[in-house]
Every structure is written in structure tokens, then in C-alpha cells.
Amino acid sequence: MSDSPAPRREGGAVGRLLAFAGERRRLTYLGCALSAVSMLISFGPYVCIWFAARDLIAVAPDWSRASTISTYGWWALGFAVASIALYFAGLMCTHLAAFRCASNMRKRSVGHLMHASLGYFDTHASGALRRVVDGCAAETEGLLAHKLPDTAGSVAMIVGMLALFFVFDWRLGVACLVPVAVSLACMFYMMGGRGMDFMTRYMESLVKMNKTGTEYVRGIPVVKVFQQTVFSFRAFHDSIEEFTRLAQDYAVKWCQTPQSLSLTVISAAAVFLVPVALLVVPGEADLARLAANFAFYAIFSAVIPTAMTRVMFMSEAFQSAADAVSRVEEVLAAPVIEAPASPCSPRDNSIRFEDVSFSYEGAEAPALDHVSFEVPAGATVALVGPSGGGKTTAASLVPRFWDAGSGRVLVGGVDVRDVDPAELMGRVAFVFQANRLFSQSILENVRAARPDATREEVMAALEAAQCGDIVEKLPDGVDSVYGAGGTHLSGGEVQRLMLARAILKDAPIVVLDEATAFADPENEVKIQAAFRRLARGRDGAPRTVLMVAHRLSTVRNADKIVVLDRGRVAEQGTHDELLSAGGLYARMWADYERAVSWRISSVEGGVA
Image 1 (cartoon, rainbow, N blue to C red):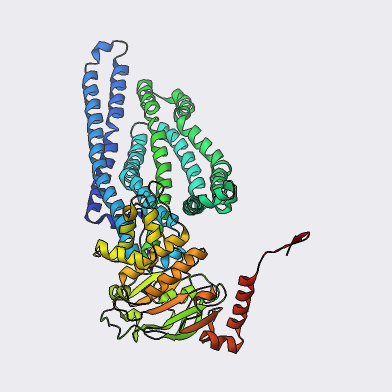
Image 2: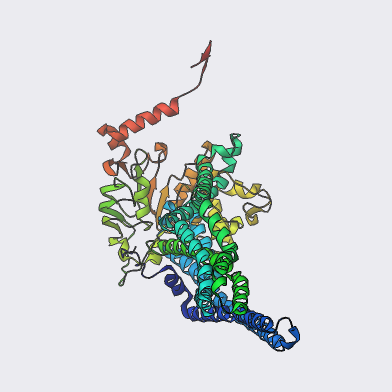
């Protein structure tokens, strides 16, 4: 796994986004330029209106003398058509760049996750990752395809608007600036420091709601079994409440008044012209020109709401995009499994932990603290101990789901970090307690361990894993698609299929984590038989097995038992040796025997 630091987030959100677009980012620049020119050209019809009003007032009331009016009309039409054409061309350019950017964001994120350490997915829920990979990329499309060219157009609009405000009559122009200044002040109030903080918390709340929503959907069977409502899944309910409260508080308490004021003043911009006109009329020598100017500004003030609305949505889009690209960069900073420059091949199939320590990100105490033990080639070693002792963590370090923080995990005398990841994964088969089947046939689900396996080899693996009764009860046998047509299996049956995968892979090293966790007594008997078959290779030679278990009955015959407690090795030895030592394992075994001998018996007046 790479120990390199996360990529530095240099530049603004737009620059970091455009980096994903590659060569097509030039189309974004071109599209923005075309949008800006389009907006400036769109002022042409308003100027034509001013010329028409000037000529009409100059010849009033003999309107027939205004012979150039039709010319101004054609010019206005030409400006409007040119503006629309340029804007359309600009949007075509920015859309091409935006789609490439979103596509590359998804590809790079998924590609990076394909090489990320498998342990990363244990600490990052699939719902949250889906929201980042798919949702955040989708959010950037709107910014690059629409908001960015609109922003360029808005800037050009504001610059052109300010210029036109002072071209004809600076006094009326200043009157038009008043609502612009008030609207900008309101926007800065809403989108300032607190606005950025809100957007960050808003996106976090969305991710949290997606994460808990996915978990809730997966837990619906449990909810139905116990006749509970949605409120029984507290995390999902609380995330919805948090999102609702956050949005409502921001909209009502923070934005209601400034937004109302902003919309009011920009929608009534023409009203600010009236008192100014009344003040300047008494001293105005050319009333006709003043009337033409007033008509122009009264009509042109209709542009102000459009410009300010674009600025407002532009600010929101930039905040959202900045958060989105930051979250994608966090995914791209996930630790990855890197192949060593000079890979080494293990000499045999032994496993050895040498003073290994490991801590999860954000954890106060280490999950493993200077752990050392050995699994000889062909031996079966069991990891037992209280919950939270570090058993699963230790098992996950062998196939490099995580890398040790200090110390070494050796396979065949070679540090796993010095073994090519493909070779390491080929040497190790693992069956964990949280297993899922794909929405494919049972045959393809088992064949996933070795895609080139023949149908006969898959059937042999299923038989060795005691899955004959599972195949017989399915409507289409081994070709039945899991999850379709009512094809569902119990937890213990799924575990047996996972063992069939491991048997088919025929790896010399096997890591088992709570493989009987979901097994009822009948399934456990069959799983134990599958264990015995899994512990032997195709040629009959014993495999190296590292197993994690809470059921002590499954580890009694192990070659060695390692007891982990609070991340440390409390003791190790055979079953008989540990019982004789009278330590933690002996106490756990005594508790286990009392538990299995416990019976419910009827007595008079109650239950004993």
C-alpha cells in the first residue's frame, strides 16, 4: 500500500475540475468566450431601441419622417440571432468538455478504487462511495456545461451593463446601479462565510443520507421480521431529520429576508429611475433626449434581474462544485496496493507476524500492538479471543487488505509488501463472515474464484463444499440466478458457497474469518466437513490455514491456537496446553462448555 501523502489540492475548484477534462478543457475556454461575446451582442437590440426612440421623439408627431426605424429593427433582429447562435455554439463546447470531465472523474475514481486496499471498503460504506463517484461527478456537469459559460456571460453582461449605464445618461445609470448594489450585498450576506460552511455541511448530510439509506434498504428484511417501522432504523431517520433541519434553517433563518429584499429591488429597478428623472427634469435643456434616455434605461433595467439571478446561481454552483471535487479527490487519495519495484516470490506457504502493530484511521488505540506468531507451512492456526481483540485485523493483513503500520507480515519468508499483489492474491484464498453473492448464476458465482474453470471443476468444488443439497433445491440447479425468481439462500448456505469458491481457487494459503458465523447446527456440520476438504490441496497436500473463530469447538483440533486480547498476544499453544495454562483461553473454554450444556427444563411453577 502506498504511504505517499494525499495529492495536494492546488488551485481553485474550477481549475481542479478542468484538469479532469484533459485536452477538452480548451473547449471550456472557447465556450466561455463565445458566451461572453454572445451576451455583449445581446445588448445590440437595446441600443437599437434607443436609436429608434431618439428618432421617433425627434420627429414627433410626424412619425412618417422616422424612415430609419425599419433599419434599426433589422439590426436588432440580426443582433438577437447572432447572440443566440453564439450562445448555442458556446454551450456545445462546454457540454463536450463537461461530459469528458464527468466521465474522467468517474473512470479515475473507479479505477483508483479498483486498486485501493480492500480494507478501505470496510471503513467506507458503499452508499457514501456511490454518492461521491456518481453524484459528485454529475454535479460538476451542471457547473461546467451551463454555470461556467453563464458566469462568463454574466461577467460580460455586468461589464457591458455598467458601460451602457454611463454612455447615455450617467445620472440614470447611477439610479440603475442602486438595485445592483443592494442585490450584491444580499448575495454576499447569504453566500459568505456561513454560506460556504452550509454548503460543506449540506454535502456531508447528503452523503450521510445516501450511506444510511443504503444500509437501511439492506436491513429491510430484519425490520420486517421484527415488525418495526422506519423509525426503528435510527441512523437513517436521524440523517433525514438532520438534512431537513439543515436546509430549512438555512432557507428560513439565513436567506429569507435578504433573498426577498434582493428579488424585490432588482425586479423593480425601473422604479429607481422615476425620482432621479423628476429631479433632473427642471434643469434639463434637451427634454427629448432625456425622454429617450429614460425609455432606454426603463427597458434596459429588465436585464438586471437576469444578470443578478445568474450571479446568485453561479455562486451556489461554485460552492457545490468545490465540495464535489474535494470529495472526489478524497477518494483518489485512498491508499492503494502498489506492486514493488523488484517483487520477490515466497519460498513456501508459511505465515509469520513479526512485531506487527496496526491502527485504524481515527482510532485512539491500536488494533494490533506488537503482535508476533507463526503459522508453519501446511499447519492450521486459529486466532481466538474476546471481541475487538484484533483477530479479524490480523487475518486481513495477510492478503494486504491493510498494510502493517510497523513490523512485518511475512509469507514464505518474504514481506507481503515485497510480493507482487497479483501473486499474493493468487496464493491466498479467504472466506470472511460478510460475504455477498453476485446477481448471477450459482455456477458463475463460484467460478468467480477462477474464471477459466470448467463446469465440471465448479461442480466438483460445490460437492467438496457440501453444497449438493443447495443445488438440488434450486429451480434450475447450478444455473439458477441468485436473487431472481425467489432464489435466495440462508447465511450458512452462502458460507458454503464461499467455501466452494475457495476450494475451486485451490490456493495454498487459506484465511477464514468467522466462517461459521451464520451457520445453524446442520449447516455447521457441513461447513466443518467443507473445512476439512479445504484444508487439503488438490494433490492432497495440507494447505496453510489461518482461521478466526468465536466458536471454540471449531478450533479444538488446530495445530496451534493464538489468543489475542486488546491487540496483543495473550498466549498461544495447542488446545491442551492452553487449558493446562489456566489463562484466558481456559476461562473462555469453561464459559463455552457452560453455554453448550445449558438447557431449558420444565419445573413446577416456571422454567429452570
